[in-house]
Amino acid sequence: MPLTSSSPSPSAPPLRLPRPLGTDAPATCEVPPFTPVRVHGGRYQLQRLVRHRRRALAAGLAVTAAALVAAGPRTATEPHRTERVRGHPVAEPPRRHGGVDMVTAPVRISDAATVRLLRPGDRVDVIAAEDPSAGGGARVLARGVRVTRVPEPLEGASESGALVVLSVPRSTAARLVGASATARLAVTLC
Image 1 (cartoon, helix red, strand yellow):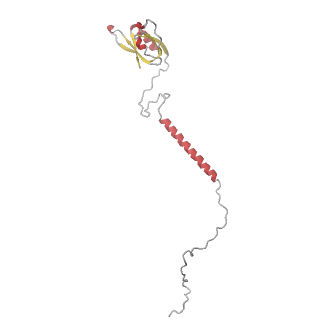
Image 2 (cartoon, helix red, strand yellow):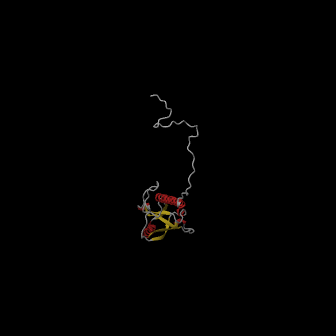
Image 3 (cartoon, helix red, strand yellow):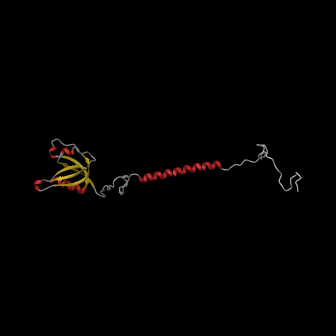
């Protein structure tokens, strides 16, 4: 059968022609009115975030300070520690004379010029030199004792030596007095 009808069939979609450019957009519509959305506590949360940030920074600084103190050099208040700290060599703690009575002992040193070199607070070793013709030698009587005073020499006493006052343990003072009767005493600076 020939097609004589120009009307489209009821089952076929209608034929649409393209529209001119810019006219195929849908029509605009207005935004319906609505109440604004408000976030409650937003300002408080911002302050809380800043406050926690400060706490975190303070905690970090505290941890850093503690680490620096722990890694720092040891002080004299910790004589029991002998570990290596920041490349310093391990040193023996100073020997303390616990319970030893310290006394001041005046000692006559045979060389007056050596005594003039001493100042209060200096540490010295006291050496007894006995007469070599009698078979004696030199021996150390006291090690690292502190000079407490250096009295002014008396006129004409330079031939017999000079006096120096030392702070020594009581037992060492007895050795110094005994040796000064038989030997000539000398000092060396520590």
